[in-house]
Length: 235
Image 1: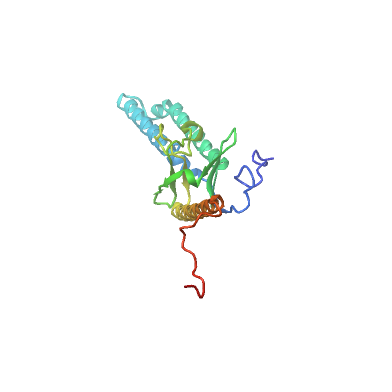
Image 2 (image 1 turned 45 degrees about the vertical axis):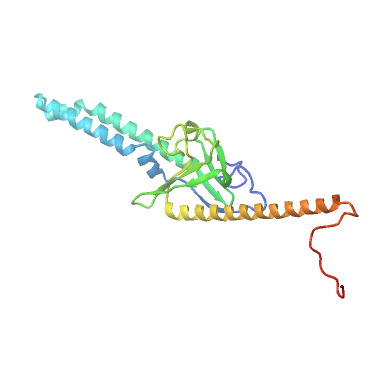
C-alpha cells in the first residue's frame, strides 16, 4: 500500500471543490534533482580531483602505481557511497513530490517520511518566474505577496535556492518547463480577470443596494431630485 493511498486525487490532499478544475500535474525529474539540488555531479568531480591529486602525490613520492591505486581504494569507495546516497535521495524526493496547477491555486505535495501538502492560492501569488536549461527542464519560482511566507527548511528542495529570509516556493526540475509556465500564466491571467469581474459586480450590487436604501429611507412627501420620465400630454 502506498503512503499516498489516502489521497482522493493523486497529488491532492482533498477533492477539488465544485467549479475548480485541474489544469496540469507533474513531478521533478530525479536526474535533474540529482544534478541541481543534490549536486551529484559536483560531488563526483570533487572526489575525482581528490583521487587524482592523491594518486599523483603517491607516485611522485616513489610509490609504485599498483600500490598507489590500492591506497586510494578507500577514497573511491567513499566517493561511490556518497554519490549513491545522494542519487537515492533525489529519486525518493522525485517520487514523493507532485506539483498541481488548478484554475485557482498551486498545490505542492512533498515529503519522503512525512507527506505534506501546501496550497498556494493565486490571490497570494505576486508573480512567477521561469528558468530553463538546455534539456528543456526548468524551475518556476513563485513570488508571494507581502505577509505571505513559507518555511525554507520544511519545503526544501521545492524552494528557490539561497532565499532564506524571503523563501519562494518553486516547481523545481520539471520537464518541459516552458509549457508548464504558459499553463500557469494563463491560469493566473484567467483568475485575475475573474476576480476583477467579481469585484466589479460586487461594486455594482453595492451601489444598487445603497440606492434602494436611500429610496426606502426617504419620507413619502419629500420631493425627489432624481430625474423622472415626462408624462405624455403634460404642460
